[in-house]
Structure formats: structure tokens, C-alpha cells
Amino acid sequence: MGHNKVRVFVIVATVGRADLLQHTVNQLAKQTRPPDGIVICASVDSDVGDLEHKSILPVEIIFAEKGLPRQRNAGLRHIAGRADIVVFFDDDFVPAHNYLEALEEVFTLRPNLVGATGKLLADGIKSSGISFEQGTAMVDAHQPADIIQERSLPALYGCNLCVRMSAAENIWFDETLPLYGWQEDVDFSFQLGRNGILIYTNLLTGVHLGMKGGRTSGKRLGYSQIANPVYLLHKKTIPPRLAWRLMSRNFIANLARSFYPEPHVDRFGRLQGNAVAFFDLCAGRLHPQRILQL
Image 1 (cartoon, rainbow, N blue to C red):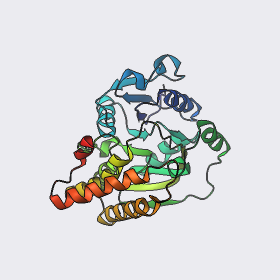
Image 2 (cartoon, one colour):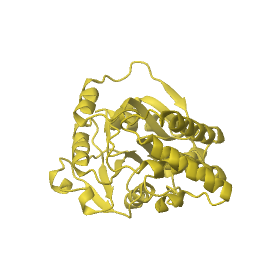
Image 3 (cartoon, rainbow, N blue to C red):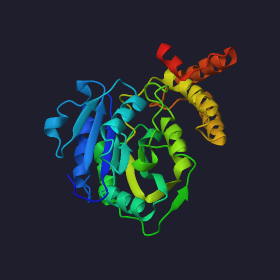
Image 4 (cartoon, rainbow, N blue to C red):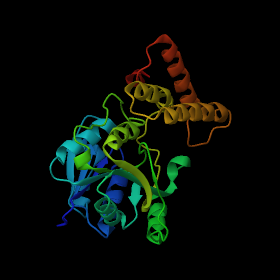
């Protein structure tokens, strides 16, 4: 694709959203700086559908056992030695048209920068979701920021995770975190941050559609909301304040809203999962993999 000095690759892990995937991948053709490679990591053929034939840009499709950490690791292995910067996009993330151009510039100007995440123009996770048409309209209307807003972070979490490959040698997404791999981004990027600076920047922008299909059940997510931060605390790959904030905020929200839940959130299921996790914690058997039995 591109012939730029800095090789920028996009990795998208996907499960069960072939139609949406086709739209989001074709949207990358609008980038002012084309990607040097697009790697789609799926678990079964139906995850990608006819993407290989309907994609505007060349894509490399690979397969791995289902689970976000496993699929992202497969993508990392696939591009080993071929990329300088990689950005992990969720399959329901629509980047601004200048995203990759700004990404290359930000990383080129700052050799000590090892990871970054961008500003969300909107996040459908906090609502019933944003349609692809709404997301692209927001991106089309977006003007690059006049005033740069940046802050350093102890870890990156989000749907657009940018990584300098030379700083990420021997760092992998933790495959102990199954399925959706809740907080796998924090675990990975916290380790990455030991090798340099991590930032949030409004130079990188996009819309997270927050589509509800293909995600894990409420009960399983509720269990992960407790089990995964506790696991990462033992592993020392999450800032303790962040871990406690995540657990307390989610538990309180699930408890309070289980009486009047949002139509798009299984609050009672999440609360059940929280309760099972607390019970397992007291019983000494709390573990991320336990969600596979729920």
C-alpha cells in the first residue's frame, strides 16, 4: 500500500460482526495517509464474510482461537518485523480521516513516545450504540483541533490503541483473560509504559460506535469487572487506584441501576456476575477464566 519511511499497520480483531467489519475497513480508504497494511484477525470464516472480495483496500485475514487477547497476539505475530507503529482498532471504531497521518507525525516527533490513545468524538458504549452512518457523519464533519490537548497516562484503555513496535518486544496481551478480555488494554499498555511515555491526545480522534452484537453476556462481564482487576493487581500491571475505581464504580452502578436498568445494559446480569466474583474472592477461587463456566 504505502511507501512511507515509517510503516504503519492497522490490526482489527473481530467476532461475529462481518457486515459492520466491511464498513469499518472500507472507511480506512478515506485516510489521508494510507496504512501500510491491514490485518484482520477473526476466529471463524463467518466473522469476515466476503471481506476479502469486497474490501476497497488490500487486507490480510488471519485466524486465531476466539478471545480478544489471543486474536490481537496473532496479529502482532503476523506483522513481526514489518511494522514500526501498529494501531489496534475495535471493529466498531471509525477513525477521523487524518488519524494515521497524525499518528505518524506524533510518533516521529517524539522518539520517547511508546503508546497513545485518541479522543472519542462520541462513544456508543455509553448509550444504545451509534449507527455506522451517524459515526461517519461525525467523522466527515470533524475539523482537526486548533489547540492540542495531551496528557500522560499510566496505561491506555480504549478502542484505539497505538503502539511503537520497537518498545513492545516481548510484551503480549494476556491470554489468561478470556473472550472480550476486559482490561487487557490496561495490562498490555502498563507494561509498554515502562519503556517510555504513554499519552492521550486530541490529535487522534474517532467515533466508537459501541455496537452491542458480539459482546459477552451481562453475567460474564460482571464477573470480569471484579476478577480481571484483582488478577492484574496480583500481576502488578494495573495502577491500584484504577483497579479499585473500576471495581467500585461498576459495582455501584450495577447495584443502583439494576432496579431501573437501561434498555441496552443487562444490569441485573452484571450484578449477578459481581456477586459471584465476590463470593469466589472470599472462597479463594477468583480467576478470570471462571467466566467460561458461567
